Image (cartoon, rainbow over all chains, first blue to last red):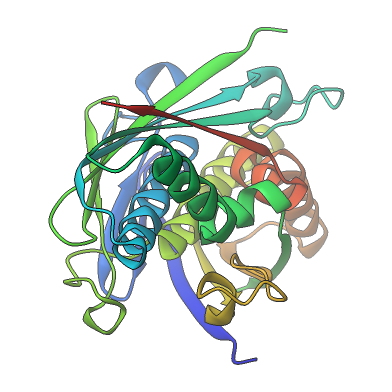
Amino acid sequence: MSIEISKAESHLLDGIKVESTSRGFKMILDEPVEEGGTDSGMNPVEAILCALGSCQCIVTKIVASNMGIELEDLKIELEGDLDPAGYQGDTSVRPGFQNVRSKFIIKSNASEEQIKQLVQVTEQFCPVGDTISKGTNVSVDYEIK
Amino acid sequence: MSIEISKAESHLLDGIKVESTSRGFKMILDEPVEEGGTDSGMNPVEAILCALGSCQCIVTKIVASNMGIELEDLKIELEGDLDPAGYQGDTSVRPGFQNVRSKFIIKSNASEEQIKQLVQVTEQFCPVGDTISKGTNVSVDYEIK
């Protein structure tokens, strides 16, 4: 077992705009004006959906190659259900996504049976999908400068 | 209870590079060359860390405002532990993050007691933190074009 550590850093800019970096790559996330932001980027829950869809695309491509399946096109549509009451302080409602749905739209000349297996294997081995669906402990600490 | 639906779409480009969009905002994720990508963006697990850190920054800022705390500076350092054996097919190892750590680095003239409470409340109400730490059902479906 050889654990690799992924790293990132987030920095609060003006208002509630946040710049995050990982290995030198940058991501600006923000909130729409009606949520108190300046709408300069997607918001963090939309970013999880993008991370999930991207991870599923990458794993699908790799698994397809291993299965000898050629993908002509792959799009994944994602949705997540969120009740704002949860993050606004109603403790009877969870603040995070209640459900996430992911729909693979695949163009390929593989058989339906192969496509079904491709999607199943991808679901099983997708790191972001596993992190979200199985849940992962998040420990929080702080330091006062 | 009024559910809002967040949406995104991911599209596999050349190799394992993926373009994802949400409300018109774009994110390019990829893998390093040694993982078979072209290193044109951070990878999906790094993107989850950025989504988490951004969400924690936004919630901290909002909670701090509600508590009358002024934040001079807020950075969050994030780490996630991943064992590649998991996504490479070893079913005895989970493919996703095994643990995530988040360290808030706060510059403020609030008391330590206030900062402690600020971090606790943020942890409780952060949508991305809740989605990951409590786990969220991800249902996968497909359509053949």
